[in-house]
Each structure stands twice: as structure tokens, then as C-alpha cells.
Image (tube, rainbow, N blue to C red):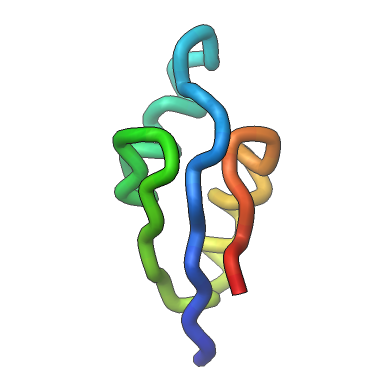
Length: 58
């Protein structure tokens, strides 16, 4: 599978608790942090849940 890089671009302050848990599961703890993951369906679903807080970096 291909790997993708995910970057947090908006603050988690004010986000619902389940979205904060999703960011933690992705490994995103601060703004502008970039993490690399395999492009599995579960990871893509987590990214889709917090798509307004993150961006996929090529």
C-alpha cells in the first residue's frame, strides 16, 4: 500500500471529544505536525472524520 502524509492545519480546541480522540489515534498532537501512515481504509476513514482539521500532504 502507498503511504500518505497527514498534517494538522487547524487547532483541536473546541472540537468534539471523538474528533480529539481521532487526532490522537492518528498521532497528531500539535498544529503543523506531519505524520506518515499507510493508506488503509481505516486510516482513510479517520482522516475523513477530521477532514476540516487536517490536510493530506503529497
